[in-house]
Structures are given as C-alpha cells and as structure tokens.
Length: 420
Ligand SMILES: *[C@@H]1O[C@H](CO)[C@@H](O)[C@H](O)[C@H]1NC(C)=O
Ligand SMILES: *[C@@H]1O[C@H](CO)[C@@H](O)[C@H](O)[C@H]1NC(C)=O
Ligand SMILES: *[C@@H]1O[C@H](CO)[C@@H](O)[C@H](O)[C@H]1NC(C)=O
Ligand SMILES: *[C@@H]1O[C@H](CO)[C@@H](O)[C@H](O)[C@H]1NC(C)=O
Ligand SMILES: *[C@@H]1O[C@H](CO)[C@@H](O)[C@H](O)[C@H]1NC(C)=O
Ligand SMILES: *[C@@H]1O[C@H](CO)[C@@H](O)[C@H](O)[C@H]1NC(C)=O
Ligand SMILES: *[C@@H]1O[C@H](CO)[C@@H](O)[C@H](O)[C@H]1NC(C)=O
Ligand SMILES: *[C@@H]1O[C@H](CO)[C@@H](O)[C@H](O)[C@H]1NC(C)=O
Ligand SMILES: *[C@@H]1O[C@H](CO)[C@@H](O)[C@H](O)[C@H]1NC(C)=O
Ligand SMILES: *[C@@H]1O[C@H](CO)[C@@H](O)[C@H](O)[C@H]1NC(C)=O
Ligand SMILES: *[C@@H]1O[C@H](CO)[C@@H](O)[C@H](O)[C@H]1NC(C)=O
Ligand SMILES: *[C@@H]1O[C@H](CO)[C@@H](O)[C@H](O)[C@H]1NC(C)=O
Image (cartoon, rainbow, N blue to C red; front, side, top):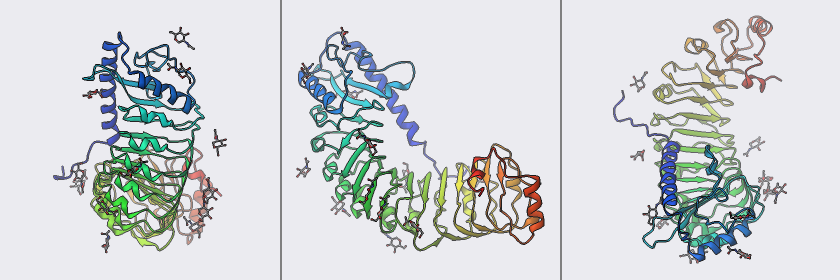
C-alpha cells in the first residue's frame, strides 16, 4: 500500500449517511411529540403562503404539518420521502416544533419559488427539483439561514441574483437545468462555506469572476453546458479541496491551465469541448485518487502520460477521445478497477497492448479512429472492444478483412456513434 495517499470516502455516501441519521432523529422526535401540535401559528401561516406561491394544492392544514401524516410526508417503504416531505424539528428548548426542511421534487408545481419560505426561521434545506417554477430566487431568501438550496430542472430565468451571496450559511447550491442568463455575480464569492456549486445547463455568459477564488471549501464545481467566454481560469488552483470538477461544453476556452496540478484531491475530472490553443496533457500526476477522468475534445497533443497507471487503486473510467494524442498506449495494466477506456479519434500508433486484448466483456473499450499498426490487431474485434478504423490505412488488406469477418458489434453502443 502506498503510504501518505489517502483517498477519501465519496462525499455522496457520507452525505447520505448523514441525511439518513438526521431523518431518523427527526422522525423519532416527531413521533414522540406528535400528541401536541406545537408549530407556532406564524410558521403555519408562512407554510400556507408558501403553498399558494409554489402552487402546492394538496397540503391539508386541518392536519398538524409536523404530525408526520402521509398528507404531509409521503413515507412509503422506499425513498419517496426524499421527493415530497416537510420535516420539523420538535426537540427545541422553546418547546415548539419548527419547520427545518421542505422537499417538493417532481410535483409539477407551476408557481414561483416562495418568498414566504423566508418566514420559516429554522428552515435550513429546500429542494424544489423538477418542477415548472418560473421567475427567480426571491430577494427575501437573502436573510435566511439556508444551508442547502436546490432548484434543479425548473423554468427559472434572468440573472443569478447577487443577493444570493448573503446566504453565507449555504454549503450546497445547485441551479442546474434552468434558464439563468448573464454573468455569474461576484457576490457568490461571499459564500465561503459552500462545498458544492452547480450551475450546469443554463445560459450563463461572460467570464468566471475572480471572487470565486474565495470559495476555498469547494469540493464540487459543475459549470457544464453554458455559454461562458474566456479561458478556463488559472485561479482554479484556489479550490484545493475540489473532488469533482466538471467543465463540459461550457463555452470556456483552452488550454487547461497547468495550475490544475494543485488539485490533488480530484476524484472526478470532466472537461470537454474546449477550443482555443491546444496543449499537451495537463499535469495530473498528483491526483492518485482519480476515479473518473474525462478530457474529451480538448485539443490535447503529445503522449498519454504513464503516471496514469499510479491511479491504479481507483480509476474506473478514462476517456481521452477526440484529441490529437500520439505515440503508444502506455502500459496501464495496473489499472485493475478500469472498466471504461475510450481513446477514440486520436493519432495513436504502435500496437494495441496485450493488457487491452486480455480484458473480458465486462469492459468497454473503444480505440477506433487511430493509427495502430495493422499487425497488432487481435483476432479481429470482440464485443467489448471497438477497433473500427483503429488501424493505419497502410495495410488496407488486413483492415478490410477484419471489417468483413467481424463488423462493428451491434451490442456495443459506443461503436454505433462512429458508424457513418
Ligand atoms: C384534511 O384532513 C382531515 C382530517 O384528516 C379530513 O377530514 C379532510 O377530509 C382532509 N381534507 C382534504 C381536502 O383531504
Ligand atoms: C390559508 O390561507 C387561506 C387564505 O389564503 C385561508 O383561508 C386559510 O384559512 C389559511 N389556512 C390556515 C391553516 O392558515
Ligand atoms: C433540533 O433542534 C435542536 C435545538 O436547536 C438541535 O440541537 C438539534 O440538533 C436539532 N435536531 C435536528 C435533527 O436537526
Ligand atoms: C417551461 O419552459 C419550457 C421550455 O421553455 C416551456 O415549454 C414551458 O411552457 C414552460 N413552462 C412553464 C410552466 O412556464
Ligand atoms: C445583502 O447584504 C448586504 C450587506 O450586508 C446588504 O446591504 C443587502 O441589503 C443585503 N441584501 C438583501 C437582499 O438582503
Ligand atoms: C441564451 O442567451 C442568448 C443570448 O442572450 C439568447 O439569444 C438565447 O435565446 C438564450 N437561450 C435560452 C435557451 O434561454
Ligand atoms: C476574498 O475575500 C476577501 C475578504 O472578504 C476580500 O478582501 C477579497 O477581495 C476577496 N477576493 C476576491 C478575489 O474577490
Ligand atoms: C452563446 O453566445 C453567442 C454569442 O454571445 C450566441 O451567438 C449564441 O447563440 C449563444 N448560444 C447559446 C446556446 O445560447
Ligand atoms: C498558474 O501557473 C502559472 C504557471 O505556473 C503561474 O504563472 C500563475 O501565476 C499561476 N496562477 C495563479 C493564480 O497562481
Ligand atoms: C484533500 O482532502 C483532505 C481530506 O479532506 C484534506 O486534509 C487535504 O487538505 C486536501 N488536500 C488539499 C491539497 O487541500
Ligand atoms: C469551437 O470551434 C468550433 C469550430 O470552429 C465551433 O463550431 C464551436 O462552436 C466552438 N465552440 C466553442 C465553445 O467556442
Ligand atoms: C499502484 O500504484 C502505486 C504508486 O505508483 C504503486 O506503489 C503500487 O504498487 C501500485 N499497485 C498495483 C497493484 O499495481
């Protein structure tokens, strides 16, 4: 075992464990206290207004909202509690219950984000994922103590409001899949407790503000599918705790700054579709806990570095397709966890190494559209291995033979894409 290398448990699992223990706590206290309804009248009224604003029609106020009744909390055996629930904390010194969490996911709600939620002083978590809510994030929320804010997959639009920067308690914020436009406000740099910032799939433009360097606790940053301009900033090196970084088709230009080498905790790095100046492979040798590495269509040239084999304890997916990488495929036989290898459309030469040929059909490997020497060809393709146009055109005879005797396998969805 390599000493000093300490891969951290995946954040999501830790979060889930925390969430479950918190929910158990809440459920317990609710059961004990259910006899006496003790949600303060002001919170009942705020909930009533919240329901109207968001478009929630089936909350039944003749039932105590903290009673854990199924009218409030869908609690079948499965995890649907996470979809539709209102959670109170009834273990308070003041003897009252308080609303701490509102989760309304996939409820076809067509209202707005409720300004009245700000009247619930103990609210820490709101999740309105997958609805049709319009407008923007209400100004009233600037004064809340929210820790978790998710409005994924809604119809929110306009600029991201700068006053979001006032919710300094936030540790998680996801605005993905909406119609937010304009630039990222520098005020977000005030959210110094943020662990996760997710802005993917919006219509954001301009450059990332340098104020974001103050988000030093970030472990997850996703900004894919936007219309940003400028280069991937070299200040990404401020986010030293980052585990997940996703910049796919964001509009940002290359090259990938060498400063990325500082992010040694990365486990999941996905960068794709960057134009601009090409570069050699970015320096990633410090990232020995990498699980998912995708650098697709990044205008990379030069050779695939051998240090990738030091990611042997964790790397599951390696996608370097659509670059201009050349030379041999290095010896990555040590990557025993590797399941997916995509090297499609590069300028790779040499032979297809034995460690690739030796893998069985639990793997998906695509080395199509390269310049390997035809003599290196294994007994034509196998189901898991797409060799379509992977060989240099010099020896047409053996290439043609392979195509005839073993066409691109139908079962392999990866190869489909390259059938013209
Ligand atoms: C609300 O709950 C009360 C008490 O359980 C019940 O009598 C009433 O029918 C419910 N109203 C609706 C609209 O479901
Ligand atoms: C909720 O608000 C409506 C008016 O919008 C009111 O008629 C109703 O009594 C309120 N219910 C509660 C429980 O406050
Ligand atoms: C409930 O509130 C009390 C007092 O503020 C706090 O100590 C406790 O951690 C809270 N419980 C949950 C499950 O949030
Ligand atoms: C949400 O946006 C989609 C796509 O623009 C649109 O078709 C739909 O009508 C909108 N829905 C609402 C409730 O605004
Ligand atoms: C945000 O905080 C600033 C500085 O404390 C304050 O001036 C501003 O009014 C706040 N904005 C909102 C919408 O509460
Ligand atoms: C994105 O912004 C551009 C320019 O501001 C605008 O033309 C386009 O309609 C927007 N797209 C969406 C999906 O909102
Ligand atoms: C980061 O925060 C500090 C302290 O609030 C502030 O002085 C500095 O200007 C911020 N950095 C950037 C780049 O905005
Ligand atoms: C991105 O921005 C450019 C120029 O500002 C514009 O022409 C283009 O339509 C935008 N694309 C999208 C998907 O909004
Ligand atoms: C990024 O690295 C380059 C080259 O090493 C260096 O010149 C630059 O100052 C670094 N950027 C930051 C923000 O430190
Ligand atoms: C990586 O994560 C560990 C554990 O969270 C932390 O102690 C360490 O400082 C991080 N590495 C860097 C370079 O910040
Ligand atoms: C990258 O360049 C291609 C070809 O010039 C162009 O079609 C594409 O829109 C560009 N992408 C970005 C993100 O600028
Ligand atoms: C994994 O890589 C480390 C660092 O290069 C090395 O010390 C270790 O022997 C490798 N383990 C295997 C199973 O190859």
